[in-house]
Structures are given as C-alpha cells and as structure tokens.
Length: 144
Ligand code: HEM
Image 1 (tube, helix red, strand yellow):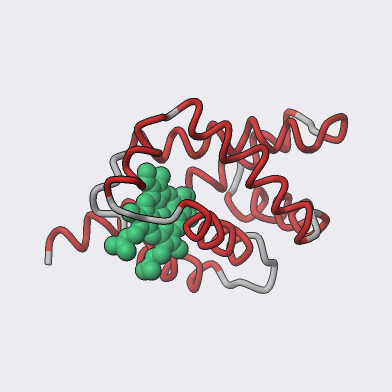
Image 2 (cartoon, helix red, strand yellow):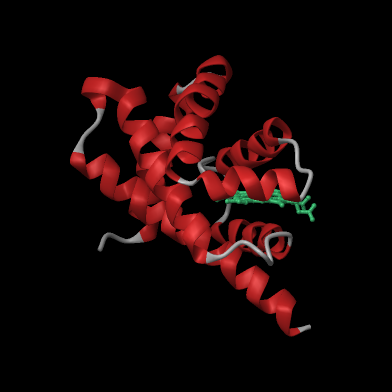
C-alpha cells in the first residue's frame, strides 16, 4: 500500500483541474447516480433523516475540496474529518464502502483515457483514509 502523502499528492494534482462546473457534473451526473444505484439504502437514509441530497452533496464535495487541497495540513484534515464523522453516528461502514466504490467508478468514467490504475489506487487510499477518520469521529462521539 502506498503512503497516504503520496496518494494525497496525486489527488491534489488531479482535483483542481476539475473546474467547479465540471465538479457539479462529476458529483451530480456521475457520483450520485452511481451511489444511489449501487446503494438504494443510502437514498432511503437521506429521506428518513429529511436531509436534502443536493445540500449534502455540496457538503461532501466541500469536504473533498478541503482534503484534496495541497495547502491543507494532514493534522487539520484529520481534525475536520473526525468532527464531520460525529454527524454520521448512524452511518455504518457499508455506506462508506459504497461511497468509495461509487467515487472510483465516477472518477474513471469522468477521466476517460486519462484514468490509470495508479490513479485508482491513490484515490482508493485517500478515500479509505477519509472514511476511517470519519468513522473514528463517530465512534469517539458514541463513547462520550
Ligand atoms: C465520505 C463521505 C461523506 C462525507 C465527506 C460527508 C460529509 C458531510 C458533511 C460535511 C456534513 C455536515 C456535517 C455538520 O454539519 O456537522 C454531513 C452531514 C450528514 N451526512 Fe454526510 N458525508 C458523507 C457520507 C454520508 C453518507 C454515506 C450518508 C448516509 C447514507 C450521510 C448522511 C449524512 C447525514 C444524515 C447528515 C446530517 C447529520 C445531522 O445534521 O445530524 N453522509 N455529511
């Protein structure tokens, strides 16, 4: 497994090239449709919690913008993810795995010929780190 810093650097070099308009397409057309088709339970979860999917997607993408910004220090990122995780106490690991798989599928479709196996490996490594930090926050909240 690669070092996180190396994988983060790869994502930080790809992500800014998706301008805001393209990012909307990425999340709206690619990521969300993949996510809800692989994991209809997530759609139900948002309905049950009365969470507006569009607003949540914006928050999710803001989190990725922060994570994939090269000026973000790893310590600050872990702190932010742990705190966001606290709002996800009921979100089990299954949902995070579907987020990761959907993100990878969406990124591959979105990047077309520019996609490489190595980018997939880096994206997996970073998303696994994001989801672990969020789950740690949720677990710590549960212990309070
Ligand atoms: C890596 C994946 C995810 C990221 C980065 C993310 C990001 C966020 C952010 C930034 C917030 C606002 C937190 C706050 O205001 O303190 C939020 C809230 C929320 N998210 Fe997520 N989210 C993710 C995955 C999910 C999934 C898979 C679900 C459900 C299937 C979900 C359900 C919720 C709910 C229900 C809230 C509102 C919590 C509340 O207000 O009590 N999230 N998310």
